[in-house]
Length: 463
Image (cartoon, rainbow, N blue to C red; front, side, top):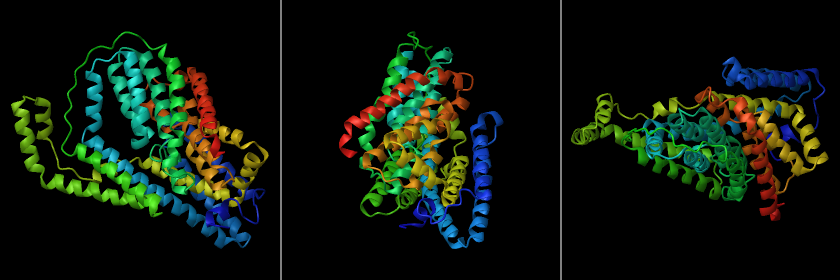
């Protein structure tokens, strides 16, 4: 018993899976997750049902533990789950704050305007947005990247609904694939890195398989993209002061977290919270020099007759780091809390140990890890990956990389299988739907299978 989490998930002396209250706990989790999957239909935020289920499940777990004299063990398991969540919460909160700060400084608006004004053809935009999604998501996370690239598609493709739909499918696949080879690209890869299962540089072993996952369906879809160019538009966006410095400090923050985690064995959240101080000091400088900066920009705008910038300067307010922090995806952060506690509670009751024995003892491990990716297309990849990490199956390094890959890219097979897909259904409502995505599921599955085969071939020495 190396840790409370390991005790709770796999080394528990007594299993409670047949206890009526344990069965009720599973029922509560299933019902809660049914509400999560129906989020688009019910317009109910996904955090609500899992927060309620997490509380109810742990009340039931505490009751079972009290009846069997295991209260201390249950408390240790709960404390371990809360510690894991707190580290991820702090990490993600800083990352989301930086991304929101870049958005507030209009960095993403400037990138979108640049793409719109270049006069690319539909096919060129299809590849440009896909490639950018693949390479931006490892740093900015797949959800933010998908939303940014989708804004470009909707802007330039408003005369071609078919192009917007196919482009959104391509962006979802590319963003998820790009996020699979970086700890910062997806919550699942972040969990794997923080758990210490895969080191930071080892994620790059998945670069080529992830690239194949993106390129195979994109190459097939390319044939069906309209050939004509979109209607020419002009859009001018000037970034706010500090935009480039915000990017520089974000990269420095990532470097701080990576060095601290890899060489000093500190939790990555410590380095990220230190990086939050970088942004706060930048915010202090921007606030103290606000008036001089506005006067300098106003003079430039007058000389260049830039009315858009003058209008913006009339309503400009000093940068406040707590504004982008307040706009963090709190629904996602609270949803993740509910998932961690729900899965942790079921792990204490013995269900994860049973599933681990079934999948990683009775089945072939490659088949089991491939199935994890398929499950993540139906059930969100966060609880699936957290369950695998809680099981702590005895696998080779190649198999851990495989399950990291499949959990990251498997959600691309359905529009509801990833946060990027769900978000784009809302942003490109009417253009990108579950039905539009389903038309391309066979070619996405082809890319999924190809990425697994490439990983098995290229990283054969790790198995």
